[in-house]
Amino acid sequence: MAKSRTLPTPAVDVADSYAVRLMQHLVVPTFVIDPKRRVVIWNMACERLTGVAASEVIGTGKHWQAFYETRRPCLADLVALDRPEQLPEYYSEYAARGHNGLGFSAENWCVMPKLGSQLYLAIDAGPIHDEAGRLIAVVETLRDLTDQKRAEMALKELATKDGLTGLANRRSFDQMLSDEWARAQRTQKPLALLFVDVDHFKLFNDRHGHQSGDECLRAVAAVVSRHAVRPLDLAGRYGGEEFALILPDMDCDTACNVAEAIRCAVTALQIAHGAAGAGDHVTLSVGVASHIPGGADGGPDRLLGAADEALYVAKRLGRNRVMCAERVLAEFAALGRQAATVPASVRRKSA
Image 1 (tube, rainbow, N blue to C red):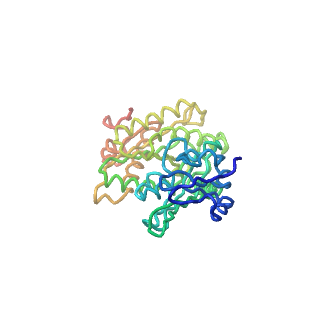
Image 2 (image 1 turned 135 degrees about the horizontal axis):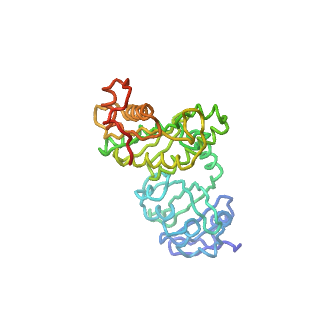
Image 3 (image 1 turned 90 degrees about the vertical axis):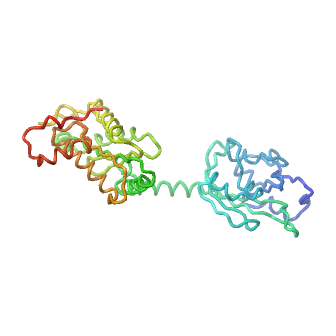
C-alpha cells in the first residue's frame, strides 16, 4: 500500500511536522482536509480501514469515494463549511458540538466501495484554527463499530420480532399502532387495521399436529407480510393464529381490497385441512376497520375494538370472508347476535 504523504498549503505547512508524522502512524484511522476541502493527510490506519491508498486521495477532494458510491459530503466537509444544519440529511446519529468549537460527531453506515462491504462507522471531525481564529484544517477520525451495531440490531430484532413468523411481535405492534394513531390525529387521514384469523386452527392442530400448525402459521404470515408494501405498513402476529396489519392513510374500501387479496392468496396455497366442519383447505376470516381519529376518540383501542368486532361478524357468518366494521357492525349488533339466519342486508364483502 502506498506510503502516506502530505501536501503543503499556504495555510498550514505540514511537510516536516512531527505532529503530522505521528498522526500518520496513529492506530486510529484519521484524515485531514484543508480549508478548500482537499486531503492533506490520509494515515495508514485510514488506508487499512478503507482499502484506499493515500496516493489516491492526497491533494484531492475525492475522500468521499472511500466511503460512498455517490458524491456527498463527509463529516469533515460539513465542519469545514460550518453547516451543522445538514447533519440530519446525511447521518442517522449525530451531534454538533458548537460553531468554531469542537466540531461534529456522527454515526453512519458506509458502503466502502473498495472493500465491497458495508461498515458502520463512528465519526468525529474537529476544526483546527490559527491564532487569528482562521480555519487551517479539519481532522476526521473513524472507528469501526460494525460488529457492535450488528449485535445491537440482532438484539433489537429479538425484542421486536415474533420468533415463529418473523413478523412484528405484539409489543412492537402495539407501539406502532399507538404511533400511527397519533400521526393520523395530526394529519387527519384515515388509519386502517386488519385482523386476520386462521379458520378452525385448533382443529387443524388436532388433525395435523403442532409442527404442521407452525408451518401453516408461517405460510399465512408470509402472505400477510407481502401485503405490507409501503414503508409505514406493519404486519404483526397478534396472538396465536391471529395476525394484524396496520395500513396508514387508507380508507375502509381500499383496506377491504387488501384484506380480500390476503384471503384469496391463502386460499390459493391450498393448505390441506380436512377436519370435520372445516373444509378441505385452510381459509381466513378478516375483520377490517378504518377511522380518522378525533380529539375524543379515546386512542387506538377504538380501532382495535372495531376490527375485532368485524372479525367476530365474519366468524359468525360462516368464516372465509372479509367484513368491514363500518358497514355491518351496527346492523348485526341490533339483531343481538342471536339471529338464526343471516339478514339479507348483511352479506360477504368482496373487493
